[in-house]
Amino acid sequence: MSKAKRFISLPVLAVFLLMLFVYYTTIFIFIDYWVGLQTSPGTLNASVFTVLASLSLFSFFVCVLSDPGHVPASYLPDVEASAHESAKDHAERKKCDKCFAYKPPRTHHCRVCRRCVLKMDHHCLWINNCVGYWNYKAFFAFALYATLASIHSVVLFISCVFQKDWGSNKGSSLKIFYVFYGMMMMALTITLLTLSGWHVYLILHNMTTIEYYEGKRAKWLAMKSGQSYRHPFNIGAYKNITLVLGPNMLKWLCPTAVSHLKDGVSFPTVRDNS
Ligand SMILES: [Zn+2]
Ligand SMILES: [Zn+2]
Picture 1: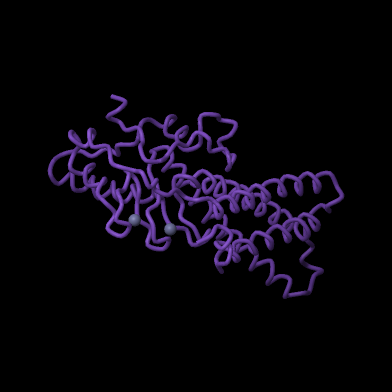
Picture 2: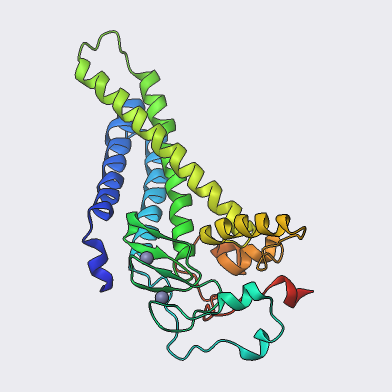
């Protein structure tokens, strides 16, 4: 699928329209009714919200347009390393039975994209793309900016509701709109907060969503045989963050600052560090 064609999808269009709708109502209805756009608190809030909304939109586009990570045609598993690898690691290196090519560690085959994706996290319907090695940072930035924008919008909405003189207003359709909007924004904010929190947890442990579920199974299997299981790529919280978001803290939330990413076919493990 060509990159621009990923935009031709109902969920992608829905996300885009939702962002436009929330932006328009927050700026031109809630801020305007609350203090007025011409006042200094109005201008300040509108500017902050515009920055957050623009960063969300930009990160969203980067997520949709980025290649999540394809396996290089020349990739061959490291035979020397596999001599003293555990059976589980070795199994990871097996060939993909759909692509008939070797799978690097942390690579998974996506049934929707019909190809193997490096460090695949999950296939995301809302961006019509996989979330993998190359666009995970943009995905995380999008989740975070959208969460902040959503919280800001809820705060402005609540301020506007308290400001409004409901007694003199007889229009019940307006009240229905406010109730509908309030419920929608609450649901959206809780969803985004959960999503961001979940990915903060995953980044701190250097895990993908797939690895989290695989790890749960591996832990259970290890426990049954009286052993312990540790996620091999978790090399300490700070190092884990820099591997995903980059070494420069100032660029941690820049979705396009991905020069720290390598080929995505090998990753430092606990064993390398010990
Ligand atoms: Zn495959
Ligand atoms: Zn996919």
